[in-house]
Length: 96
Image 1 (cartoon, rainbow, N blue to C red):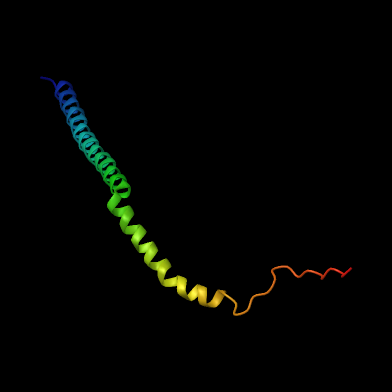
Image 2: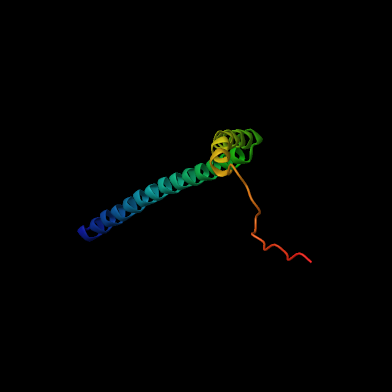
């Protein structure tokens, strides 16, 4: 074999080895991307099902009602006047 032929074989082998390495990297990135996408989709589905569950809705409703019940007595005590009068002042009508 001549030196040109051996150089050409070495260069070809190097190019093929680089292509194989790039292919392995791309395959690994593809697998990682697929795992991430499936994880995001799975997490979104589980979160959606959890938010739509009657147990969570009941838990949130109980918490809100508990807060409102705690606030209501204080609001009513401060908001209601002791003495009330007519809502709109009116003029008295002349007597006939």
